[in-house]
Image (cartoon, rainbow, N blue to C red; front, side, top):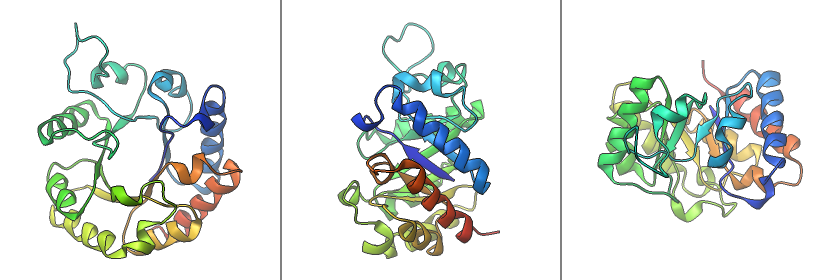
Amino acid sequence: MFIINFKNYEEIAGAKTLKLVKIAEKVSKKYRIKIAVAPPQHLLAEMARCNIPVLAQHLDTSKIGSTTGFMVPEIVKKSLVKGSLINHSEHRIPAKQISELVSRLKKLGMISVVCVKDVSEARRYAKLNPDYIAIEPPELIGTGKAVSKERPEIITSSVTAVKQAKNSTKLLCGAGIVSGEDVAKAMQLGAMGILVASGIIKAKNWTHIVEEFARAISKNQKG
């Protein structure tokens, strides 16, 4: 899995969002790997018409009905959104809400990606059996210093923690990834994919960098 989080960067505002989604579509097909995108929330329904999985950057635990201003799993599914990031370091939520969201997404057949800051959280939330745990040390996010190089032990320890849950959860690696070499290293350490934002969004040539990351995943994926 290769997830591109668009965040709210100005570089992808307006029509540029669709441009990057179309690039991701082409690269996904070319390298036969799964690429998902998490565009700005207000564009979810529009981007979900494309041919790759579209994820929300955040969802709320509010109920269906008179809950103004909240992003509700059951409602976004109707717009063909495939899942969501949960507990990103820039949008942390309480453990009870994480548990509820994973459960609701599972019942809806939607993808859950729980973001964690350390091995302890990886171990704790892997027990919920989300589809993915994404390890992202907050201090490395957006720095260009990849966790696979700066703190490789956090990836190997998180891989072990996720495996100990003895379920189907897979580990993704994020934070500071800016090159195919960073991606390859993360995969070699045991990650099953990546969650990346600025390393792509702020690159000068989107096609080049998305392909570079995709090649690294394709060459290093297991089984």
